[in-house]
Image (cartoon, rainbow, N blue to C red; front, side):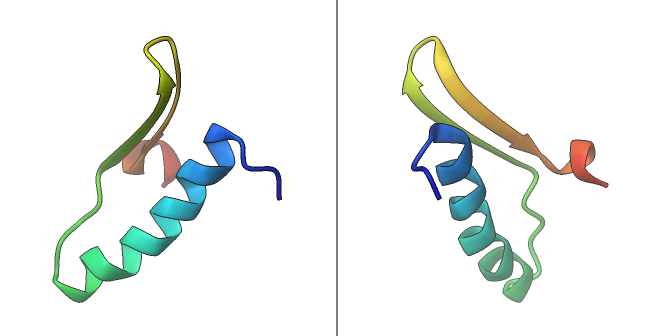
Length: 48
């Protein structure tokens, strides 16, 4: 796996999601910025 911003974001999301679920919380949105104009976003609404 290449450590691109997109791949890192998905990796972090995969780590966070079970932790949130365990505590009965819902992970809604994750944003990882490389620079002010270069970033990746994940939104639960886009992944249903």
